Image 1 (cartoon, rainbow, N blue to C red):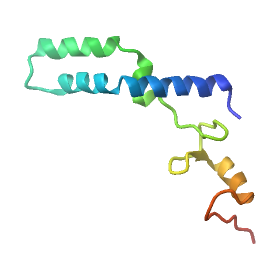
Image 2: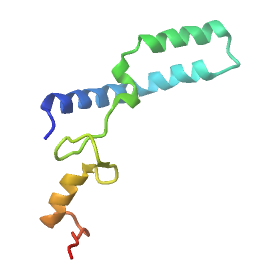
Image 3: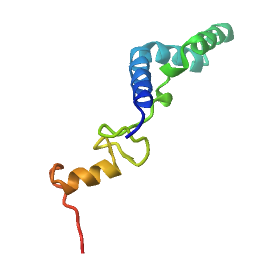
Length: 101
């Protein structure tokens, strides 16, 4: 089980990036638009730099919903391989059968 602080920090980053996604996308569009004057693009770059770092989507880490484990994460199931194996062994994941030979 991951530390509660790491899970909560990641959730805070997820909420912040979701709330500021529109503003961030607008500023990035201005920065990448080559038809605008350089002064306007530079001002947008400075505003983008003033935004909180945790508002960037790249800072959000995919974590297991069950355990909070950050590695070996299946996006489709939103859980780690270890949690998937345990739940599959208990028969709690529909359509998953653990093989043995």
